[in-house]
Length: 88
Image 1 (tube, rainbow, N blue to C red):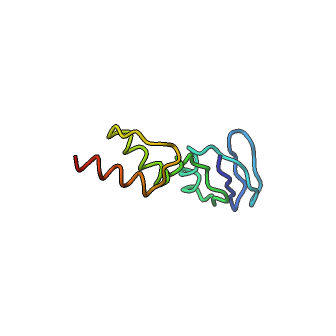
Image 2: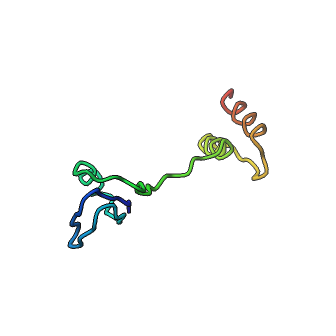
Image 3: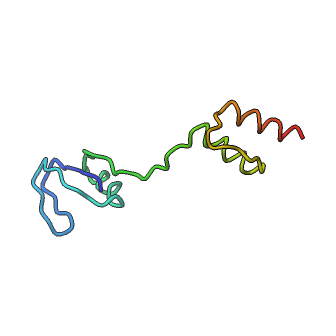
């Protein structure tokens, strides 16, 4: 949920908010409320998928190529194994 305020008294979902009061609104209503003159005080929190590390990406590629590797292999060893598998 986002937080928004207005410079005037507003009614939102059955509640009346005086000017400059910060209140929570549904994420889907933010665009319309901004058009009506509201100021976003706190953006809605979006679910962001965490980025994979280089090591995780290499492990995924090794899995696709059918390379058997140990869990303690680092970037260098995985890179070498992938290059070798691609050369064959």
